[in-house]
Length: 65
Image 1 (cartoon, rainbow, N blue to C red):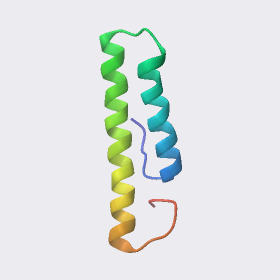
Image 2 (image 1 turned 180 degrees about the vertical axis):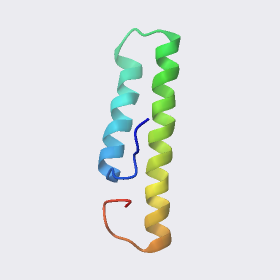
Image 3 (image 1 turned 45 degrees about the vertical axis):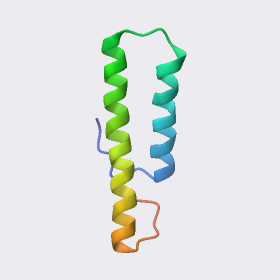
Image 4 (image 1 turned 90 degrees about the vertical axis):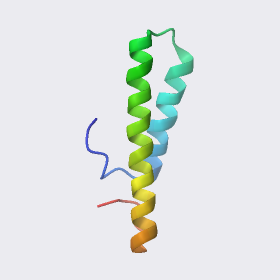
């Protein structure tokens, strides 16, 4: 997955929703499901990192870096 450090929380949420919808919208293979789930894990981890960084540093910026 590409570097997610410069994405806003809103963009991360949009991408998470997109991949969650993809799991429901299509007839896909198990391999594709696993690929999508991996993307979701990475996006959710990135979002959590952004939130933790903001909480720890008192930053109000939408951006992680």
